[in-house]
Image (cartoon, rainbow, N blue to C red):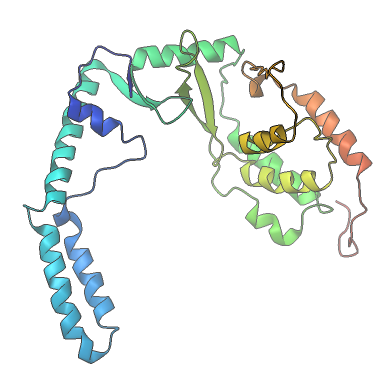
Length: 281
């Protein structure tokens, strides 16, 4: 946990935050005990009639243990909910937020104004512009039209599965690069709601099948790199150098990338297996 604010946290608060962003405190037992009891009874009724009474007795004892206020789990959960409530009060008072660092699972506490300023700098430095109108519906119509016309590579039966039903603009989330000077952000975009998300996943599979890339100098992950390095005879005179590309994805030339992909696919273009049932648009 990294605190970039003046908010003072006690050890309990620090310990709770150190569980990470995916940790959540349990609901009070009274909030779900009725549902749990009903579902337990339904399960018991599926058993042999001779066994139901025995298991109903066991279940009753377990349910009583769950709702017992002196249960250590209940005491811990109640304390954690109190700590989180007090932490939220401090965050609201200081106008601060909790976010995630770029590396590892470190939690970062930062003032909202500072966070927003870092995002603004990133957008400005990379020449992002504000649109006067949301283009989502326009893109959705263009994509639907393109899908209908792409009968050679898209089966009509799959169209409904690769069409986004209710598209919306993707959301940007900023992760903080604590290891970099000035703590810049790494933008993380959730494209699941974007108009082209499902189509892009489908097209990725097709492009992979028809694009022969020379991967002699590429690695897929750190494990692959380690396996390749084991094969080398490395001496003390060798050095491993790593180059970091600043804002790689936002600086990829789109049209040049499209041209390269087209050339690669043209070299590996197999004729369609069956187009007898399709007519040209």
